[in-house]
Amino acid sequence: KTAYEIKECDWSSDVCSSDLELKNYFFVFVGKKISDNRYRIESDLINVNKSYYETIEYLSDQEYVNLICESSLVVVPSLNEGYSHPVFDAFSFGTNVLFHKPSPAAKILEGKKGVIAADMKSSSNFLHQVQYALNKEKSTTEENRDFLTSIGATWLGLTQKYVDSYKKILGYN
Image 1 (cartoon, helix red, strand yellow):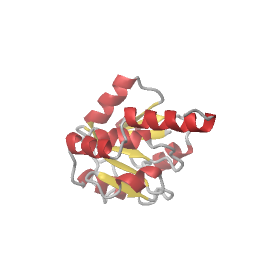
Image 2: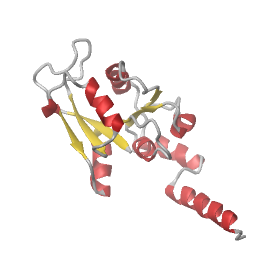
Image 3: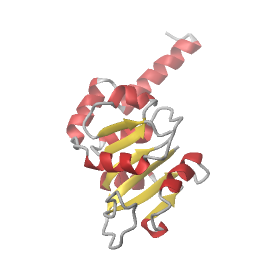
Image 4: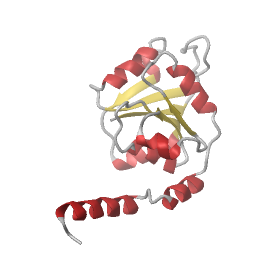
């Protein structure tokens, strides 16, 4: 899976395409370095000095939580995102999130504050999608967690659903 966060910082030079103002952000790519999606996104950042973003292959759980909480936006460009953990993680912390529209997360979260589901098959308008997502109204951690709890999308609730599914498959009552 590939996810990356955008954190506020102070860029003093013009590093972005002329039609966008992303100078106040630092991009952090988190995920497998071999991901095709990472190269697609990086190709859109060709005009951005590489000193303004980094790629991290692994984070501890605490580092991951800290990065999400410090971020202005979490982008999950994966076209084949399964359960969409990074999307739900960012949403649960009240961080704006931009992700690929056909994912399961889009069916659940689309229309919520701070959530942008977009077709990310083409990188031609990626920076515009990021700019739009950065300006989108934020939600709060409390309202997002209340929503997730109401639909049973908590770690405990989801674990119980998996256990129940396995019990049914294995013939346990």
